[in-house]
Length: 517
Image 1: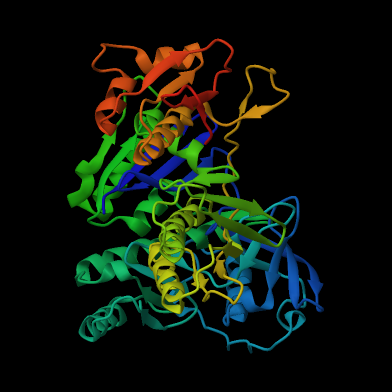
Image 2: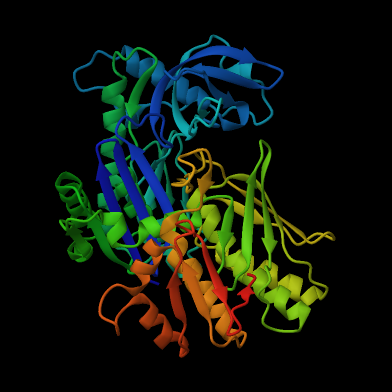
């Protein structure tokens, strides 16, 4: 699998597109004034305790108080509160020596929020979920600082190794190395990327994170809540930190500062991959050059079309997301069960991509096309799990119910990506909307392919004069229509009709009768 990262910098912020085998799978945006991103650390002030919810509302500077549930308190919450108070009040020149910090006993799992936060203290918190709709951020007191190979967690001495490292010998080796080099009062989680790495590489990663903790201490000294204590890395660097591997073969950036920052970051974490970063200076927009704009237009919106002619309907409600799978009218085989299975498998792959692309979280309900055979249902569930495997968000896929419904839960971290793909209608000047014009060419080609596959001869395509000019411009043997004739091995006539609006088109057979699509 080839992975590419395309970074588009604009005055209002940065857009980052992740491509896998040229297909858009993730789209991130980072506003220039971004606040309350997942991973950011804030010094907050407990404002209100809600015993009924066993939770607290904390002021971190957002217009609405952030939510902190008892289950999101670290077992070491008392140590965190003590550390926060001591660091704020610290006036020593060299700062608090964290290695000498005495850790407090753990809190009980079934305790009450007022037992821990009774005095409404100042507390160091980490953003768990970004503000979504009318809700403020969700907080956690389980502070974690992620690196490329390890994650450090203060106030404990536990060393854990990722379960995705299957070799018992390798797990034992990494455990021994980390136990020998980790700083005191820090727990360490060894990430999957650490597999095969030597002591020096792990030590360097640990040192960077330990220095980051010292930065937190410096920023906490004399701080007054609410205050940001530490920002998560830029979105670009955090993606590279988590995903950079041998599959990455291209990173293209259209901004010199981001290019230099990205290049230096890769040189630090993976010097052998530094040559994959390139600066884009072509005149056309970077997303247009790499076909991302077109993919965005075709992938967002209520309806998502699949190559086979099937399509998805994606609806959003307050409580959940609903996805309906429709086969359309373009079934190839006469075997209904086989048609349903093939359509469902194609839809499952696209649904897994859509969940990542739109960052849909919470409960997702999928209404697949009904299948009778249990082995087909089982195959669909297995394939869905396989397609979801690259997704970094925590998720669970449940078996298909009696009603043919699949339920999926996916971790919700930030607001979903929602892009309006409709354009202002040129005929009514904005009183109505039309589908994106950039997709018209693909739609015509898809329908032409379907008609020729189903043995239609002597086809004629009638379009608006502007579209006619687009399809026939250039040398006679190199026009869009000529390429389609070569591709489908059948000649199709194209005519212009001024009565057709811009996106209107019709196919006619050899008897001049319209073919209904």
